[in-house]
Every structure is written in structure tokens, then in C-alpha cells.
Length: 413
Image (cartoon, rainbow, N blue to C red; front, side, top):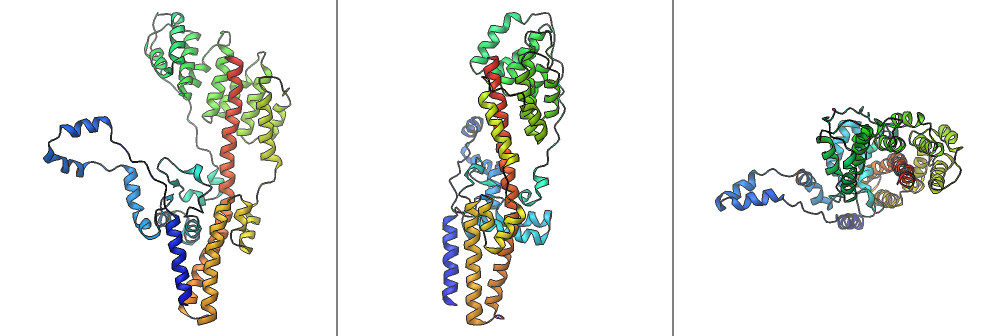
């Protein structure tokens, strides 16, 4: 029994040592704060520093200090104790116990080795209770607001003479300044003005304003085709797929394959495989769409023609061998920590049972802990499949948006 306790302490020590967090960059005060602090009398600096509001990052770090003192710095935010409190409130006590057990097995450098891309600017992985809700809730779409902008001031000044100046600003990374100049100057209304306002906002990554102004360009204008396609892609980036489709469906110009290509990409974003097959029938593989068309076909094949992991069978695999289902889900780092944690607790339970009997308190203690982490391993595996598919979906959507955007630059620039 003495060896079992020493082994448990050794495992906890290794876990605490391995759970060291990557360094977090300290927040620097704004220049204005530095200037003010220099002007304060020395006698007031201490009290002013005490009254200064604490950044939200510092509050989070302070809340996580208790857990960090016990098991080392936590790579997750919120920390496991706070996570358990939130999980109990939102999904119930029993699921919270198993969810926290699964989370604790991942709370090491090994368990988060493949999650480097999920870390925020503070070096932490921000994963709350929402990760352990059903996949339907994780994949639910938020409501997209309807575009509505106040009319800009109008006047008699023609905007035609400002085109070169606006192009100069955009070409020199001053698109935001160009957008403000066009918004505040009382130019005479025209399609050219709407296009320039939309294009400057698009170049400044103000996609809501870009979509609005570009969609106002008349179909008889020389700027119409470019405005229509870039208005549609701006709407797609903002999640307004129906509005983007309505713009593309109303297009009757010569670039029909480009319009079909954009509609095909939006169909993938909307999870409409039949609509994608219908639109992709117009693909010819001609430049400049050839490479992007191949990419969309590959995304379609990976999403709809490749068999994905089943949450049920992955959970069953983890019931047979702890962590095995997470291997099938593509989470090898979490599989290792699940196997080691559950296996170690099972070994302690077996040794206590053999040496002290089934009714000894040590056997009951390790048996209870082992059961909790074993069930948490199964529950976590089921959730991991949904999380993995959700992350894959996010990466696919980003790839789709990238590929339907790239040809527009080649066509209209």
C-alpha cells in the first residue's frame, strides 16, 4: 500500500510539472496612462495604483490561482474548479462530475499537445461548458442582423475627380481613411460614389458597409458586375448566405460560371450537398477558376463522401480500452492522458483490493475515483467526436470562403 501511495504522489508530481503554462505576455499600459502617472506626485502613486481597475485578464488569472497552486498552471480557462461550478449550474451535477473528470485528464501538456491552434492571445485554451453540450447546440447559427445604414450626406460635388485619390489611399493601406472621406464629404449621388464607398470599406475589412454600398450599384453601371460579386462575397463572410444568393441569382451577365461557382461555395456553407452538385455541373476547369473548383470538389468529397467517426462507436471503444475512442476521433494527446489516468487508478484499486480487501477505505476511495474517471473518459469521448467535427467544420468553412474569394481578385483586378 505504501508503494501505491508513493506512486500516486509521483504521478501527481509529474502531472503538476508537465502542466506548466506557456508564458503570457504582460499587458502594457496605454501611452496616456504613462503620461498621467508621470505627472502625479510621488505620495499619490501608491493609492492611485491601488484604485486602478484590474484588467479582466488579471481577474481570470487570480481566480485560477487556487488550481494553479494545487496542480500547476492550468492550460484551460476557466480552470477546472470554476468549470465544475459552471457545469453544475448549466448541465447538472452528475454530467458536471464526469465532464470535469474528463477535462482534468486533458489538463496537462500531453493532453493539450495538439490543441496549440486553440490557444488565445493569453496562452490559454478557452473552453467552457458549451463544449460538453450536444452537437446541435454547438453548431447552431446565431441570428444575422439585417443591414441598415443611415444615408450619407449629399451635395453637388462630383466624385469622378476623386477616383485617383481614392485609389492612392487604398493602395497605400489607407482604405479606412478613404471610406471616412467618402462618407463625410457631400458628394453628388452616383453609382460611382456607391462603388467607391463599397470598395474602400471592403479594402478596410468593413464588410457590412461594403456589402451595403456595393449592392446599391445599378445594373446599368460599369461598376455593376464587380460590385455585385464583391457584395455577395462580403455577405457570405458575414453569414448572410440568403442575401448573397439573392444577389447572385439576379445576375444575368456573361460570367455565368463564376456566378455558379460562388453559389456552389455558398451551398457548401449552407450544408446543401444537392445544391452544390447542381451548381458544380457548370464547372469547366478553365482559368482562373480551375484550382478553386478542385478545392471545392475536394471539400465536398471530404465532407459528404468520407465516413466520419461515430460518437457511439468511439464511446464504446473507450469503454473497452480507455482513450481508444479518442484515437478514432483524432485526439491522440487526449487518448494518452485518458489511458494513463484511468489505468493508474485501476492499478491502485486492484492493489488495494488484493492487499486490504474490497471493503477497505483505500479500495473504496481509489475504486470510486477510478469509476468517475472511467465514465468521464467515455462521456468525454462522445463529446470529443462532436468537438472534432465542429472544429473540422470551422476549418472547412474558412477554406470555402477563401477559395470562393480568390478568383474574384483574378477576374476583376
